[in-house]
Amino acid sequence: MSRTVWVILAILALAFAAITGIAVKRGILGGFGAAPQQTFAIGGPFHLTDQQGRPADERLLKGKWSAVFFGYTFCPEACPTTLLALGQTETLLGPKSADFQTVFISVDPQRDTAKAIANYLSNTSFPRHVVGLTGTADQAAAAARAYHVFYQKAGEGPNYEVDHSTITYLMDPKGGFVCALPYGATPDVLAQKITTAMQKGAGAQSC
Image 1: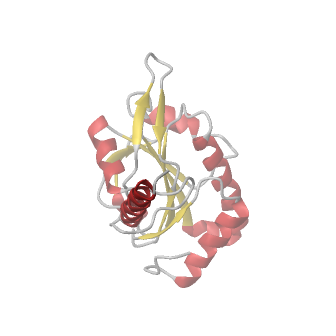
Image 2: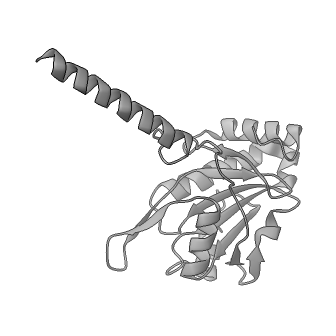
Image 3: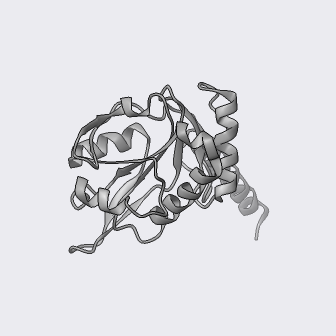
């Protein structure tokens, strides 16, 4: 291969690396399983319905440390895995669990009625302090945008799946974003991060 071709390839590689670096910095791209960098506001207003059929909005985050996770009741792996881990985390927190809650927001409002979510969250291995939220398609989309969550229907027919982000967002008692809890983290790791955040107090934005 000629020297000229090698020079051109090197220039192209450097350009690609620079563009990729900018994209990662801006939160457009990220490594597999990596927590997103906070380069934009995470969280905000939403208007949904809880598993009891009552209206709910972002005020339910006030006064509690909240693990906010977007998923759906027909989810085959990521959702039950995350909820099982948070259930064990709740136990590991001990007395601190009184100040902690899990907030499960559906990205499948077509099937996830309030009753369906209530039945799903009744699993005794899932967190006891849990709020399940659903709503109209527009309400679900607005909540997902507030948290920069990706989701997309996959497949056709009644047994379709929904591809979605798997990050859990830890929010402080003022409703502010603290840190991302990565999918696959063990209950021990989750409990340690949450405990650290509690010790630092609201507004720390790290755990």
